[in-house]
Each structure stands twice: as structure tokens, then as C-alpha cells.
Image (tube, rainbow, N blue to C red; front, side):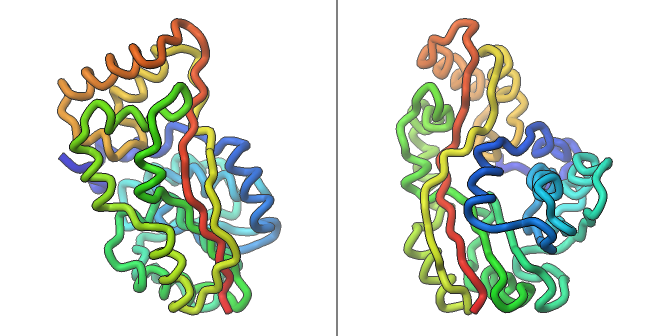
Length: 259
């Protein structure tokens, strides 16, 4: 069954990683976060909220529709200064107009049906000339074949019904670009990002994360029995023994500016 983001048992599911240098590097190349006021919409467990502060942001406001996710995010950022959290959603953040230098929406828009409302709200809270960064998977990203790095690609190989599930909830790149443009946001570039998700010492570490469904809402579509079948399938495909496993995820990033 789909993940319940409001269930206390899922509070920490998006808190188990740190933002990799591959992500920090792309952000530095795309936008200057130093001394900027940033809204992290759909902040989840606060992994990227924390990273933005570590990269020099003046203040980061994490917004999420789930009070449980915000509790997890507060735990992630418990030792950080210049961080605050607010319960709201992508259509109504409850933030003042023209207040942020940067809006980040990472791994969010595939949960949304109304991109126009989402992007209109992002435009509203951005200062003129402010930057809007969207990071999500297109249908094409989701259907890349599995490999020793693209662990996620093995999911639909084992259970083809996940293909329809992914395609139904993902937005095509042209759709995102066009929606940005008609909501007062000028697209500056769109590109593919291979972000290192995690480096596992051995397969046992990867297996434990998969069993816990940590930060992977798609795995909530599988029964416990199916999940174990998937893990065995991945183990056979990787044949890594005790070697480290470097998992990478394919994303599309859209960078836009408020006119």
C-alpha cells in the first residue's frame, strides 16, 4: 500500500542519509546559496535543508505537509542554526510573498497533480530574480535499466507493474518546462543529474536499507514477500560479494528564474 507520510512510524524514513558531494557540487554550479534565504518545499526529513545550511545559506525554511516529516526534519537539523520549519504544502506554503531568494523542490512534484498551482506558489514567494530549482524523475529516468549503480532500475525489472505506477505519477520534461514558463518563471536550463545516493560497505548494508524501505516510497507498493524477492533478485544481479556498492540515482533538474 502507498506510504503514509502522516504515520509516526514513517517519521524517520527520510532522515537516514546525508546529501552527497555530487548533489552539493551540482547546486554550487547551478545557484549560489551563500547568504541566501531559501525555502525547501517538501523538505521531508530535512536532509537537504541541513545541506543548504552547511553550504552557507543565511536561513532555510523547511516546508512539508506532514507534521511527522517535520518532526524527523527537526531531528536531522537539531544542531543547526538558522533553520525553521513550517507545516504547509506546495500549493499553499503559508510563506509571505517575495521573501525567498531560492526555492528548492527536490523529489516533490511527482506527488502533485497540479503543477500550475505549485509553480504559481513558488513564483509568489520568490523575490524578483529569485531562483527556482526542481529536481525530480521523469518517466524516462525511471525506466533506465538496472545496473551496479542504478539499483532502482532493478525494481521494475523484477515487478513490471511498477512501470505503470511510475509513469502515472511522473511528469515529462517538456510538461515541466512549459508549466514553468506560463507561471512567471523563465527556464534557464534542464539537465540530467546522477546523484550518489549512498555508498554501502557491502550488500548487507544495502539489504537492510531496502528491508526498511528507507526513503523509497515505491517500495511501499510491494508486500513484505515481494520485497524479499526483489532483494534476492538484486543480489543476483549485482554479484558484488563484500565489495562496496555505490548507488546512484538519475534525476532531471530544471533551473528557472522569476521574471
